[in-house]
Length: 329
Ligand SMILES: [Zn+2]
Image (tube, rainbow, N blue to C red; front, side, top):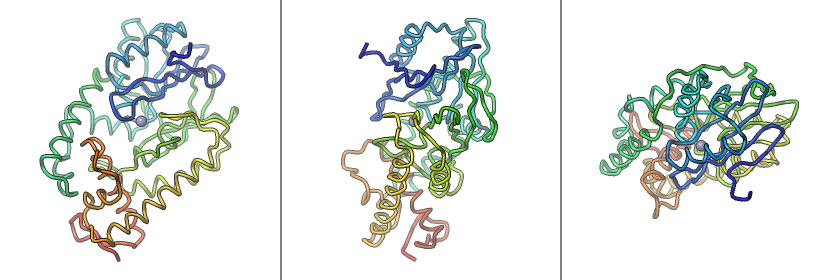
């Protein structure tokens, strides 16, 4: 059974590794068994192999589409949102209307990012950060390609707010807002079992991308670090993340991630000291960009911008009026 993508990770909770067509090559989704049906948490992106993997999981766990009670999304990045509509349509064909549950802010992000095309000038935003027009257009094209892999889109979305409890399977979870990686991300805490469905808020081996994007809420890195300090106090024996390994040392891993951003902030200041002033050049100083794909460049620029924005808010650097040009304070 070692080849199975399905692993039992807690009582009545299964993890399924769904393949992704990116450098980050899989997303962890979760299936929670309950008396009135199965809850799915996050979904993957729409490729043949991803749909086949869902079928393998359904066969192994003897789930039919009619057994799906609800689909809950931690956030709507394509690797989490992309098969929600397909799963909903499978259940619909089997005669069951399945709600897709997400935060109001993430529902707004669906409208902004995934529907037809971006409602904002993404190419203009990238070039203002120092990217060439050719590279910015390539980034934009790759977004169009990714957008196609989020279809079919769900027919209806159900809003769920942080602070409201939610039942998944036979468990009851607290809903916690976890901003930074995605503005409206939700994570879910089962206090009785000290178990957390942690989305992409805290990851092992890699750190979640914290980016300031054209459509972001302000201050993503500040919100992220504040949130980490808050959720660090939760008593977590096991966190179930959206990528990579399960998290057993919750507080230890959070401390490492906070330390990582401290180093990155210092590195960002050094880059400016060395004479770099715009996000693209500063990113080139910070990241090993020689082998970067346009996809990775997109994340590097947004991540650099988030750190610059944080340093500016702290008074460490200044930003030229209306321009993405930064100097030491
Ligand atoms: Zn993800």
